[in-house]
Length: 111
Image (cartoon, rainbow, N blue to C red; front, top):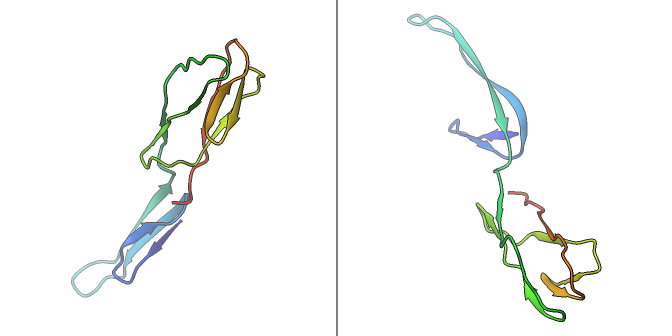
């Protein structure tokens, strides 16, 4: 999706696919001409950087520091389906000993 301003500038406003046709009707010097191009607008690829391993002792809580690029958004969700850790307000805490996997998801934004 896109919009065109009064100067002919094109700005992407949402993801999707469309075609833009530019047409010149011709005049007494130049022949008529037409060109159509496909335009695909997609979201910016996202990369999440976080420590590959976190070691805790039972009862210890730490904040998970994740960096999202390109915009360093904090719109993240932490997920875990074990009884080994608990997640609370962006922090994880060790409830018992063992190994588990913490999943970090970036929800994106509307920009």
